[in-house]
Length: 300
Image 1 (cartoon, one colour):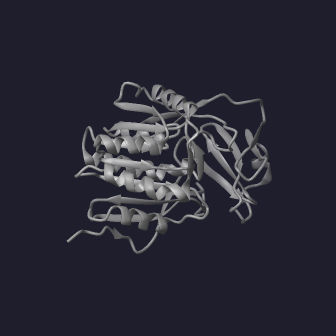
Image 2: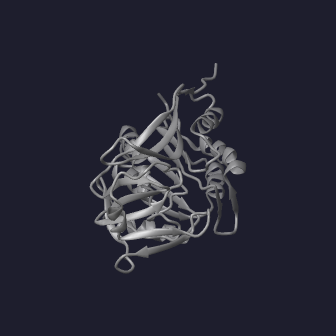
Image 3: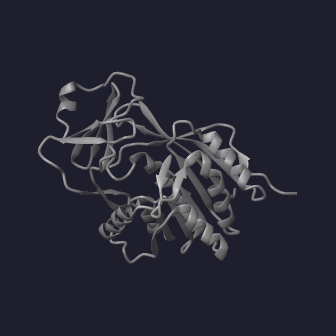
């Protein structure tokens, strides 16, 4: 009889709290005040419907403020004392650059720290040399976390610029000699080719955007293309695989939907699927901002 993965009955909220190089300082009135290293930053966050806790003067003293130009996260930064060059940050043993992009983020997503901690534990449980595939890997922080925990990582992203940033992060972390393969390719095409080769991985990270284009103008649409990609990824898992982690930022998705997608594609493997959302928690209060949804499978 085939084993059906058990989907958790209740959602989890994976909270990212402050660490030495990051904190959610305050939030409210559709914005959030954050600390990245020594810089304070104000970014828009429409779901912050409440009032800020701190005096307006603390917000006004921010080193950088993002002014959005549309609903697709584009806009411009205003700097208090001139543009800020890329600067070093760290999480645990991993170093990476913070840099001000034109899409309101700083080249990484701090709420993902909750996932990084979980990935670190799964890789360590899998043992040295575990093979991990990181699709839509962006600037590579998750790849470096896995490599630092002992994994051999294949990092895939369709953007040459993102691959370049990821390599720079590896150099900053003094991990450019680790077993990390940097692949600039459309994620779906890469996975299709790996399936034909019979390649297997002990862990897979999937963090797709809502919409994107590959290096050869391949089109990615989350709701249309995620089921096929998840099916292909399920086929790449090794017999003793440790995990698959699926994360999405789309407003119309949910953690429970991602969980049942995984369950349908992992029929026969058994195991457990937890699901929920990632949240940032203010450093001095219990107030939280939910930012993305996840589902993750483990064999037990």
